[in-house]
Length: 121
Image (cartoon, rainbow, N blue to C red; front, top):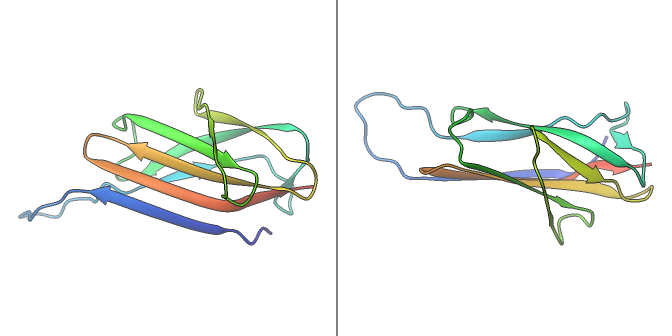
C-alpha cells in the first residue's frame, strides 16, 4: 500500500443564514485499475476515471483541472480530462504517480492533492 499524503483546500464565501446550508465542499475521486498491492505496470499508459463528489458536485462546477506529478509533487503537468477520464503515462518501475485537482464554480474552489497515489512495478 502506498504511503502517500492527501490534502485539500476549500475556498468559498459565506454569511449568516437562518437555516442550515450545505458547504460547497467537493472531493475528487480517481479510480485507476491497480493491482492488489496498489501498483500499476511501469512504462505504460493508464486510463484513470475521475469523478467529482460532494455537496457541490454535479454539473454546476465550471471547471475541473487535473495535474499529474512523477516526482512526489515537486513539478506538475496538466492532464486533459476527457469524458471523465485522464490518461497517465506511468513512469518506469519503482516510480510513483501523484494527482492534483482543482474544481471551480462561480462561488468556490476546491484544490485536492494526493502525493504518491500509486507506485509502478
